[in-house]
Length: 154
Image (tube, rainbow, N blue to C red; front, side):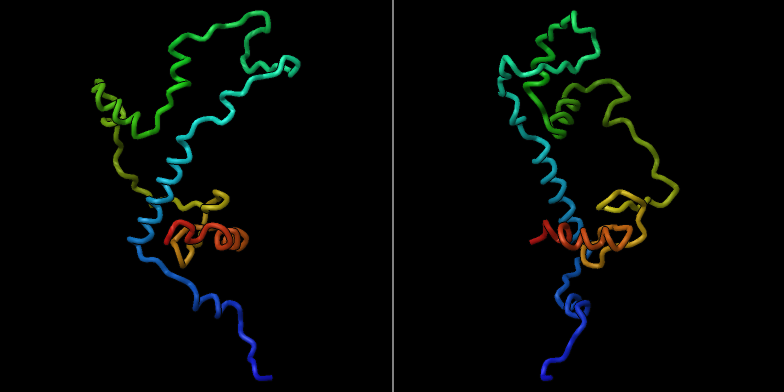
């Protein structure tokens, strides 16, 4: 009996990396940038041609007899999509009268910020020691550690 049994928790704690607040902010910024890149992609199914025999599903609430033609403006709205930063720049150039996106503001809340679980979205009580993400239960902690914890940090 040369080898001694040890707890898995003790081994895990020795290998853990704990981030400071600046590293957590950098991680959050990178995650938001990655989400922005994911949101700004062309639809892969936009150029699909439907077969004649395929059933046609109508998404409008109008009766089947009437067909509404799309205007040219609507066509260009769908063809040229913009990300959030492009929309903000356009809003700034137009310089509309208040209230607009830049002039609308509210005072800071008097209540403390609410904390929600990063995995399921329920109110959370606990914080991941390693990265500072909120979670609500052991099940969500397990999911977080298996798939999300420190995913965007190098």
